[in-house]
Image 1 (cartoon, rainbow, N blue to C red):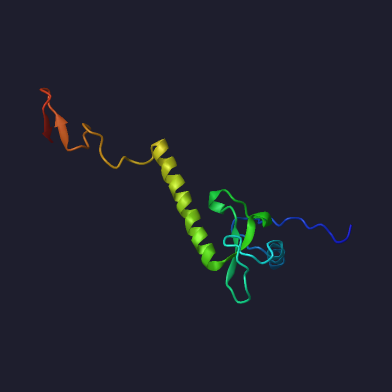
Image 2: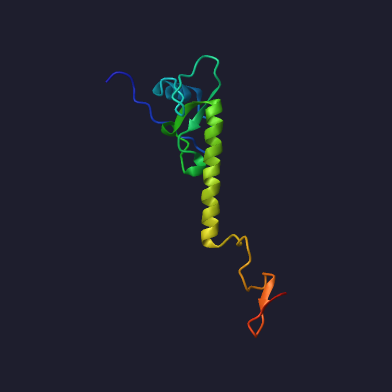
Length: 124
């Protein structure tokens, strides 16, 4: 066996910065291509390491979940990831009853109408 086997880098916290030698390994693994657009990253282009599965969507801060991305594409993907997470949170809150309905339930005290004993509907 020539060389040595290198263990995968795993960040201690979600905000841990990836060391430069690990960034180089990731760059070489992806052959210097943006993982979002597939474009070759040229000298002078601004790029970032992007989490393939975003941290907010359950991804991990580890070498196998990182890939180079052009900064403009990275910003678009991050906005989409945040929007996806917000939608999931809204649906979960609604399903477990943490949000109030947008309109009052007809006949409830919150509505502007009430029914009399005779069955007539009048304004409160």
